[in-house]
Length: 268
Image 1 (cartoon, one colour):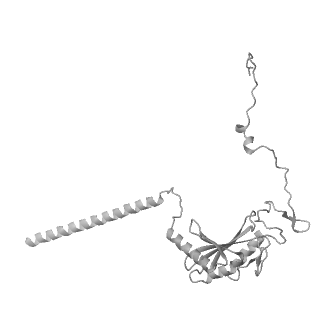
Image 2: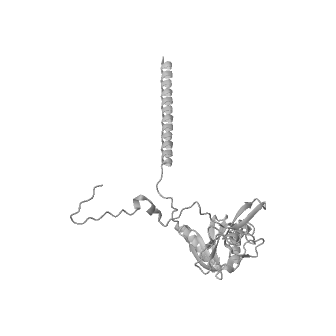
């Protein structure tokens, strides 16, 4: 009898432990599921705050220090160094310093800007040197970017950067085609986007939006011919009114007939 009672007590204790363990696991699973649902709902909540890059003063100081270092190493060519509000380092150089500066930024141990991600130009006709050349470089070693800027005009050539960065080949051809900036010592400086025999440079601010010539296929000569631009106007109607003057709500009200003293308003 004592043995049976001890066996029943042990069975009851093990059953109680089993129930408590299962209940605890179920509660733990429920808590984890609730936390997951809450985190997912918070992640899907629409955030109305603007996505503005936070200001990083440490990165700003590091870029400024590196820009000052480049200016001290190459004082003959570097004219100005600045860090923009979004922590982007810009180095303004003399046109004769394209090759030395790009070579320094590529080969220096603390720089290693070996990738030219982009090369473009900006046309500002009001300036004496109307064209601004912008070199965007990337350093995979330090995960950093730098922007090098220089300037020129319609007649002054700029040294080609193809011997330093092979990626500049087609970039410089595009700038020559669109802006007319000549790159000296370029291996194959010819147009890349416009057609053969095209005259002018479309991205210049003084180039007309309609262009000078238009192309069409001539069925008689069996080829594409270029002709001066002719804008057909027979289906267009021109008036001298402003757009908001055409709508009835903005038309001038009709002058009401003036009544003299003692006269009655005519019935409509």
